[in-house]
Length: 136
Image (tube, rainbow, N blue to C red; front, side, top):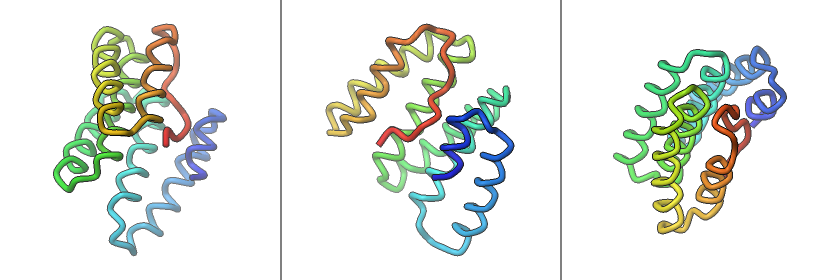
């Protein structure tokens, strides 16, 4: 996704533009998974912009919706984003706990890349930034 690439490069305004364009296209489809994944990227952009509380609220909402409709990968991805945002925003202990729990759950469910990304994030310094790339 173009927005992820812009986010990885720190180009937050460009990431927002790409999200807006993708949102227009996704509004015409019933592909819920893609819409939720886009919202996760949008939450990461918000967090990188310093809008921590709205980003956390959004990923929690996404996590609940994904769990409700059985999108386990999206649910785990939202939990990864949440843990990363917490860890990078000064709530390091809560973020680490969330990431440790996620690593175990993702591994048990066979989502090994998400488990590995959670593990990598746990090894980083507490002040590290939110993941900018996909974790699948």
